Amino acid sequence: MKAGVLAGLAVAALLGAVTVRANPQTAVDDTAVSGLDLPRNLSEFGFFADAPAQQPSPGVVPYRLNTPLFSDGAEKLRFVYVPGGKVAKARGEGLLALPVGSALIKTFAFGEGNGRRLIETRVLLHRTDGWVALPYRWNDQQTEAVLAVAGGRLPVTTPSGQTISYRIPNKNQCKECHGLNGEVVPIGPKARNLSADWLDDFVGLGKLDEAPELAARIPLWEERASVPIDAAARGYLETNCAHCHQPGATASNSGLDLRWEQHDPHAIGIFKRPVAAGRGSGGHEFDIVPGDPDDSILTFRMGSPEPGVAMPELGKSTVDSEGLDVVRRWIAQMQK
Image (cartoon, rainbow, N blue to C red; front, side, top):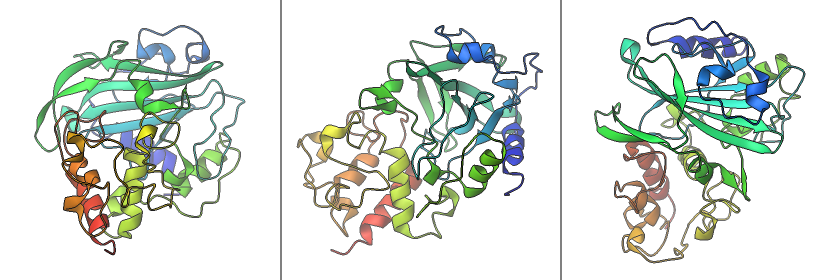
């Protein structure tokens, strides 16, 4: 996969595409990315040569995360754009430092093959005054996505067959997951959650200054059954929970720090009491009780579909049974 990982991801983005429609705009409009305006249509950015097919324009690079955030089973197509003449910088295991003028693009889709339906595309734009998060909702014809500042809801059927009222976040809700120390920041493209091959290829494209050396990489989610359960569970918690549960983030008052690099047992929840004993605790005393997932608040909340109890609070409305299983097995094997 090393030599062709980027091309392979581009092909993967095309698989199962809906009606293909050529987009005459095939170059990214740097003014739309960096300017002050909020473009009404996704096509104004020029991120895609063929947006319905999710075929990126030259300079827009597809990528995947080793372990992704669960979003009711949505297929997510991710792309990164670094403007010409600029280079992102590696910062150890953490987020790539993308220069002003860069963009992160993520499309959410449900269904397969000709039945695939694009729901929304979220863009993160790095402008001179910081990152701006904007949601774009795809029309019924699947020909264009329009800025949805107020968000929206629509019915979708998940891969597990559940019909849900899918929520497109409004512009301010984006900050709830992307907020850190009062600023909007990316949460996905961390070096530890990207493959070594992809990082090497990004360097080869001249878009990254160097491939960082990592002590440990978050494992591929597809390999969760064959990797150490600690790595699978901690990787899951890092990508699904740590953007809120870390110092400086929106749920920092919980005292829970679920980042990959956090190794303090109490900080990650082991025999840690919640800051408030409401219905969210389910009557349990500790976030994690070693050897006993049934008596742990963490798994209680992950397994609940009830609003106000379910975790994560945003970005999903169904229980991630596979993620819950991994975390339960991780807790169960802990020494009592």
